[in-house]
Amino acid sequence: MRNFILSLGILATFGLLCPSSFGGSETRYGTGTGSAGRVPTFTLDQAIVTALQQNPTLLNAEQEIKRTKGVIIQVRAQALPQVNARAQFEWIDPNLTGARIFGTTSTTTGTGTTTGAAGAAALIESPRSQVRDVQPPLAAASPTPPITNVQGSDVSYSISVLGSQLIFNGTTFNEIRGTFFQRDSAYFAFRNVLDQLIATVKTQFYQIVVNRELVKVNEQSVHLLESQLKDQQNRFEAGTVPRFNVLQAEVALYNQLPLLITAQNNLRISKLTLAKTLGLYFQPRRGENPPLEVVGEMPYMPRSINLADAIEMGKERRPFLKQARANVLNQLQQVRAAAGQWLPTITTTGGGEWVSSPINSSWHDISKGWLALVQGSVPIWDSGAIAGQVIQQRALLSETKITYDDDVRQVELEIQQAYSNLQQNEELIKSQEKNVELADEALRLAKARLDAGAGVQLDVLNAQVQLLTAQSTRLQALFGYNSSLAEFDRATGAQSTYHEMFANLAPRATKTKTYYTGSGVDAEGKPKQAEDTVVRTSIRRSRTSDSK
Image (cartoon, rainbow, N blue to C red; front, side, top):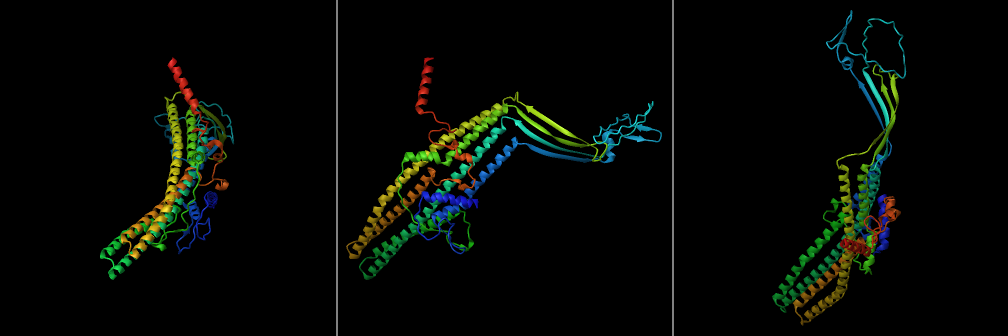
């Protein structure tokens, strides 16, 4: 249900940004029309919603957010109280009790006690019981007191309930803050996958549309060549044209058939590709039928774009950069955690313990009490182990900052490439719109001249090839423009907008200025130093060194 709400929210804003002009009577924002026995039909909006609900890459990215939440709980538990209960029960055979307690064997006879070669064993006295303390009466002094064997209990047990609490260290709290940045990084990775998925669905949808139109264009060309062949055959039978004209028409027809077959195969493959992106399973009952059909045309809506504004918007909105910022902040906490190992670590432990009597197995004759322990440790000399970890983490921090700066340049490159492709395809569309009209008129005139006997068959065939080329080029230019527009929206972070419709998927910190990635801040989000200030500082330093 949450995924469905998410999909509706994303598509609602997507529909505002990119109003569609598709035909068909299907209900929008659905998951495709069609029953079990029919091929499902999708509009562009329906395809996007289905992909948001079922695409495995997006679902995995959502699970990664949940995994990082589990990491937060796990690491945070190190700073919270922990209570553990332990119990131990032991039974020893009475035949082994004497051997374990005294260490020698003894035999009692009617006249006395005989011990082994090791001499008499020491007797073990039971500690005082907290339940019962019975003092035996004092006997009169005897020069030879009798020796009495003490029979130990064959059952022993102990129960303890102990709680521990971390008071202070220099690592745990920095690691906890680092886990929050890991969660934010997973969230921005989810958004990045979502933007990429929308652009992919658009491109694959338009690929089906253009392949469908190319099939129609090639079919028209084949039908025209078939009519030309039939006309030349009739003329040959009437004796007005030579056999060469018939052969020429046949060659042109059979040369066109592979192009039609290729276009049909490309259409089938593009449908299979989109079905995989939408997460559709293979249905055995459909056999060789296509897995889906699409409803829509190839739109052409020119957009006025300011390149500088687009680049700045891409820097501010791209989740790709925000994910890199979260990685930098996380690594910064790892540096602090590594350096925190030099600080003292203080923990406390307390609880109660219940221990059985060594000579009595009664549950009422036990020793019980409370205990408390405070421990502290501080490293004095570790042969550079902590220093080595700090050096490693600082190097990793420098790597993440360098990666962030490179990601900024990557965003700038992607936006400029998409903008250049948009310009190229827009110019191609304008040039081919007039060219298609001219090629169609040239074909009509060539056929009219041939019918009137003033032209030759080769003119008709050449005109047909020119028309097919112009139509194919225009369709490819339309596809290139729409796919480049989808890529431009992805590169600028304008594929969709994000509000509270994420159903608590977006962490609160992701909406703060922490993740502002505009041109005026560095990898850590701090204001950049002006370039002229940097230049003046470097010049001042060089002059100082020269004067020395």
